[in-house]
Structure formats: C-alpha cells, structure tokens
Image (tube, rainbow over all chains, first blue to last red):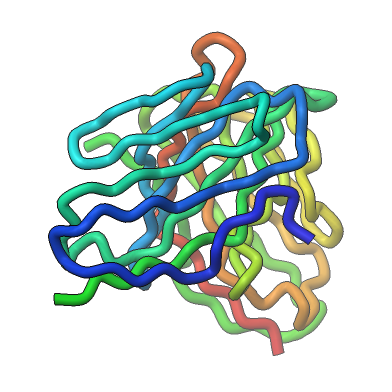
Amino acid sequence: GQSLEQPSEVTAVEGAIVQINCTYQTSGFYGLSWYQQHDGGAPTFLSYNALDGLEETGRFSSFLSRSDSYGYLLLQELQMKDSASYFCAHDQPDNAGNMLTFGGGTRLMVKP
Amino acid sequence: EAQVTQNPRYLITVTGKKLTVTCSQNMNHEYMSWYRQDPGLGLRQIYYSMNVEVTDKGDVPEGYKVSRKEKRNFPLILESPSPNQTSLYFCASSLTPGQGIAEQYFGPGTRLTVT
C-alpha cells in the first residue's frame, strides 16, 4: 500500500475552507510537498515543508508535524477552478540521491 | 520559456516492441525523474537521476531503463513492453538546492498503451 495516506475524495462549496490530510509512516525524509493536478493535465507544484509548521502561499497553506507523522494542505476561499486532484509527497535519501514517494491523491470537488 | 518536454505524447504499441520516450528540460536542472500514474495509485517513481551519469531506481523500476548522458535529457526506455506497462508517464525535473527536492516541474505526460 501507499506509505503516504490521503482521503480519496473531498467535496466542499465555493468560498469555503477545506483541509486535505496526509499521514505517513516514514521517518528521515527531507520534506513534504504538495502538487495539484487538473484532469488531463500535469502535476503542478504548490508548496514544500522542510520544517515543521505552517507555510502560507496566498489562498493555500501547508502544514507539517513530524512528531505526529502528518501534514495537511489548507485551501481557503475555494473557487470552482480548485476542483482537481491533490497529492502529497516526501523525498528521502536513497543510494544515489533523493527518492520521491507520492500519496494516492485526493480528488477535490468544489460545488457552487 | 522554461519547460519540460516529452515525446511522444501518445503511443500505442505491441508487446515486445522496444520503445523510447524522450524527456528534455531547458532549466539546467540537476535532478530528473520518471513517474507512472495509474488510477488510484498516485504517481510512482520509476527512476531518478541526480546529475549526468548518476541514476538510480525508484519504487517501480522493473521493465524500464534510463540514461543520463547530457544534463538536459533523460530518456525512458522500455526494452520489451508488456500490457502492464500501459500507463500515463510523466517526466519531471528540479534544482537540488540543499538536500531536499522541493519544486518539481513536470512534462505534459505520455499516454502509453501496450496491446
């Protein structure tokens, strides 16, 4: 199974706030990143947490707590265009460099 | 324009016929990687490369080969494709500031069907 777990689907209304959680069982990774992917498109980078705490970028914020083995992506003032899949990922030291592992993704549906 | 390009974008082939998917980036990134995406499984890393001539296996390397002879190119080779390699493939690149891989830039994807 996935070493990073995310809810498969989340539904919210326009203008609301939604939190997408990501739990993991790994230790010793460099950081937790988040990507957005619209249907038919490529993933695009949203944020990266190297340290514990909150990172804010406009309407999107991301949080990491290594002691609790989880992170989350917070989307505020939801817009219809935020309907997409969201993936968390961590990068770990490996033989020849950094290995990336992604969660299974959360499909966010924003309703009017 | 800073970008990652992949070719072809769509490919239908038959079992056993060797194929190569090319990937090129124009951002002088050290780190490059290949992923496959299957429904419900997210993105799974196939191979990655920290720099020229430095490559290593990701989570699902079986049936794939890569090479990194130049910094900008990172082709994915399927020597003998099988139907279970039918998938959507993404190439990505990133700088490697410090230790972590933060922002990856993804190519547009290659949809491969093996019959």
